[in-house]
Amino acid sequence: MVMILVQGATVTAHSPQGNSISYDFEDQELSVTFNHVVSDVNTHYIYQVVVEINSVEVLTRDYTSQNSTTEFSAVYSLVAVEGDYIEVTAKCVISGQYTQVLDLSPNTPGNGTPMFTLPFITVVVGALLVVAVVVVVVLRRR
Image (cartoon, rainbow, N blue to C red):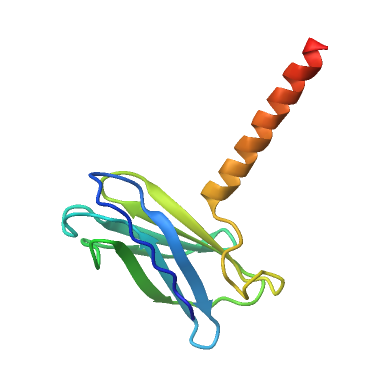
């Protein structure tokens, strides 16, 4: 299992950011890591993680601190099968939340690593809307 770690600069309040999500079929464990840089893990932290499999909530964990000043990570025991779609949402006690997605379909690139995160999809859809508006404006000027 490969974990990619990214560190950023300390800021006062921000949403968690995605980093790593993986599922181990043999051990039936979901491993998640969210980038969440904080100055005090006891006052600014991920307070809740919600896991859904195929849009059904299967796990909710509440926390009162974060494991480090740069990230939140945890391992959860749960049963998933090939073809399942897992969403993991981390919620910050101060501001925002972030959802990571893991598609366990056999055709997923990287054998179960995330294909797209929700912010990526939002950016792509936004870019397509901008292109559509530009095309409409150009066609109206003709």
